[in-house]
Length: 632
Image (cartoon, rainbow, N blue to C red; front, side, top):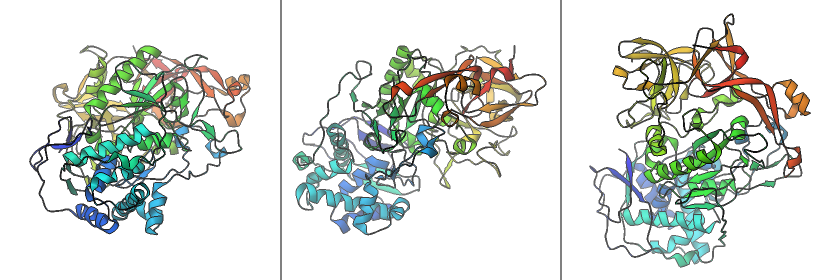
């Protein structure tokens, strides 16, 4: 079953009805209607919430609603980009250099942040923080203990009235920004008013019956919150957009140990903005905002709220935040973080979110000349790593449940740039999102079928054949149907060369092999367009890189030291005879930015090599123009 976002103040739940989520807005006025109670045998997870609430004297409805708004009652073991763990999304902010995407991360001795609701909860329980990360029961107990502590701090007691836990919920948000913290608390109380019910990915069904409760907002009056009002947001008219800056400061005496982004002057100084990257936070909006304001070595230009579509801008487009895990893409992109978790995307990617993001993307596209196509409007899951090790560990958001077709409809752009040229040798992946429901596993559990933008790719034209295997992701053994196993999946809008057809099956060149997908009457594809390239005659194979970085001669001429140069390892070898779809050639470049608040040392290095950008597999790659020839 799938969540639907609704704005009505009256909700009626039944076990046979579609699941409903929190409303887009919340009124402080008393509610005069009440949700029908939900009745079913309690799951072990439901009973865990009951026990924890009783143990720590916490309102059970508050505990359930906080967890629901943080994770939709899903267990997450260290997958949150914003440092959250478990069902309560208890935050730990270790210094994480991966989002920088710079090869010199080893030169920085990162210091762990002191902000950690995970450690605070573990201390209250006298437990190991690692246990709270992995054990859902202890995680919920930790969340309950924190709420109880916050209630004592805001009211001096453990309130018997759920309305008086408002201040505790504000503190649980983890941010000192008044608008963000209170918005989170308002959404929690909206959930309490309306109720919620769902079955999580572990098969645990949890319910919260709706209650007529008006929060006592005076309980938050003693919390020192910042009511910062920043203007001149880089947003189009008509969007609810606020500017709250990410941290830009030095973290130690080392000039290279700073964060969480780099100063630049894009697109001036010959550094173009070429991509818009769609992320999900793997957490809540307020956790990302707090994360980007602390010593996290990560940030993004914008954060988009799920329930309302509200936008928080955190970095100016001219500057370079650390969000992609690949410095080349950081240099040339704008990053958009969306509230939610990739594995439960259908529960988080609301219509409000899609529409706000589409308006923002159209605005940015027009302002910076970014093409509205799937070679430039991309997901984090389509960005390669700079080394084989980092390539294996790259993020896979926004994942299977981001509706690329609907999103491009909202952009007013075609997912099919060839406009239906039936004679094209290029295949653009285009299943019907609503009816395309591939089978996935997640954390070893078979998932319920849901609408998806991804299709499976097989080694032979048969469902009985194994899925294709990515040699970097799976150096030994077979690939899997795991939702995060990106090496055997193609997404809506990705374009490949058609390598064969057998009955209802179409073959494409994908990752150095011939990959097959089920395509009866071309129901899962449309004809595509673009430049076709292949290795030059006489070459057995050519290298595929994760960046279009300059040659050594260009660095020498610019006076860039060896340690400070951008370098990309060879990720794959493209075999002779295979053909891939490419964008126009691009000149190699590198943005040298190594020191805090020292723009005089920042410079753009232009290389002598040119590269073609291709979809080599699920992720983008680059091949040197000198290694290929264009297929007529």
